Image (cartoon, rainbow, N blue to C red; front, side, top):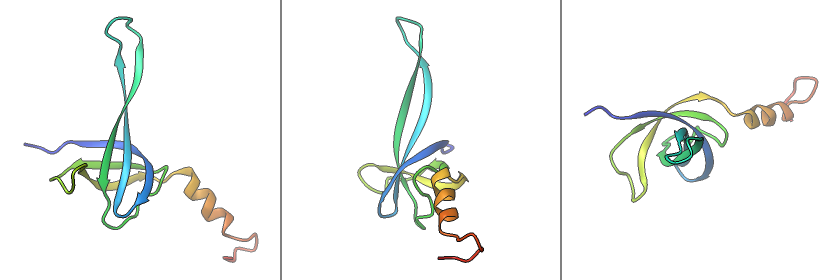
Length: 98
């Protein structure tokens, strides 16, 4: 059976080798017919700890690694904006690193 592949946003990177990723979706309300935003929260294994909070990542299903962790990081689709701001603030106007 093929493994599911999803794209989501990293919301927490405070655990060692684990990232919390939210996968947004839109569903129609059964009674009112209005479209409602929902999210699925996944715990993802990140061996090299390369994903940071705010990054958009691609994840795939894997074997259970712990009680809650069942996904693996495939790649970082897009770096978050807060990472770019930090790297720019560390560089002085002359191009030297602080």
